[in-house]
Amino acid sequence: MRYLVILLCVMFLLAGCTTTQKATAIGTAVGAGAGAIIGYQSGHGGEGAAIGAAAGAAGGYLIDKYVLHPEKE
Image (cartoon, rainbow, N blue to C red; front, side, top):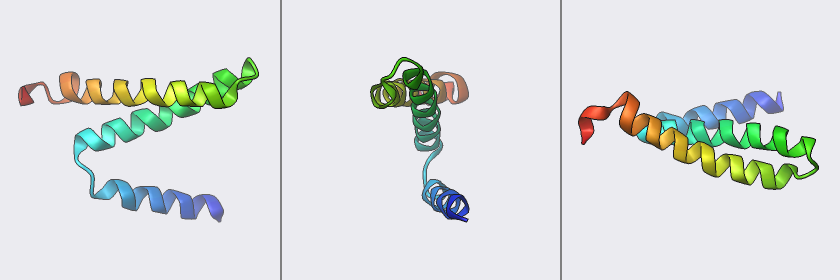
């Protein structure tokens, strides 16, 4: 039940975002998750999540800007 509430909150928060904000948020979440998993394997889960979140946010923004909407430039 707790996960359902969290999922609904995230959906409502993303509903009012632009596509760039959504891509950045999704990249951040995926990067943080991947970084936490990789970091956990080496005993540094928090640091891995932080680095993964930063890399994921940058990646999500760049993918949105140059791949999904290149005509905005």
